[in-house]
Length: 357
Image (tube, rainbow, N blue to C red; front, side, top):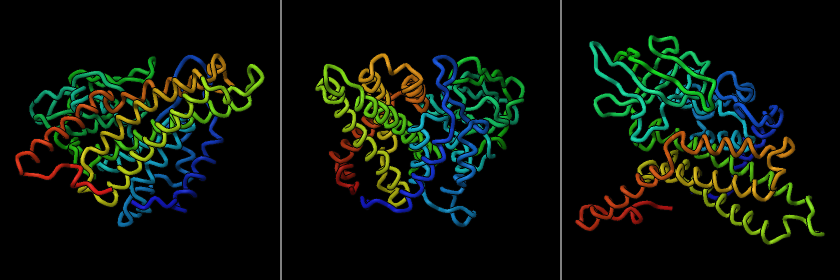
């Protein structure tokens, strides 16, 4: 992995950050702090930049910038505490789904277990209640399991038994014997190195990383000019040390996320459980760093001036959208145990010996 700053990535980050700076923030203490999906305010910014073409292969008319570009966009969306109108379209492109669709049920582990698919003549009936990105989307990309295999199914929002609820946040989709056919199955959600689930997990990890980074930036700026006991808050050890530890966690998480994204693009055979580990790290980092940032700013964290409450609510909701961190860590641990047992039996080298830096 080349650690030299990429001039193209720097320009891309600057363009996305500049565009998002003009997106009005929701500073209310109640209600949804962001708007996801096609109707979200970030969609205009991403369309102006042509973000839909960033990851698309050159053979399909895209820019072929790889998953690293998608990770960068997701991080900047989180940093600005904006809704993520990128992940659903990017995932839809991965599985051949329609643009403007919304993701539903991707938070359950094992993958797809949040919606039960009961066999019926010609297909299945879906039943369950799961989180959805955008209740206004015409098509929902639902993660479920058919025959024990995780798959993504396209369901029209107006299909029988399909309803959405926007009175809560995040919003939810409910399925009550909603019929689907084999033609609605867009693909599998296995752990293949370049599959849609792997790519979606890394985009979500980057979004969480951005949430943590944005909250930390706001806290550092505020504690840099706010004075108490004759000195800046940032100069007091009780404030400075937690913020410094948070910065270390951010840099470690960023390295894990971008290394995994680079591996997907360049060396998919050496990927292993890096995406799952990156997502688990990012979920924990987001919650911990946002909490430290709010504590550093005290009561000012809840004001419209800083708006750290937006980051707090985003971190709480987004950290479990693709699986609880504890469950993700168990996946990583189980894989390491299996690899160690195979290595002890002489059938395979340890993972540390097969994965290059």
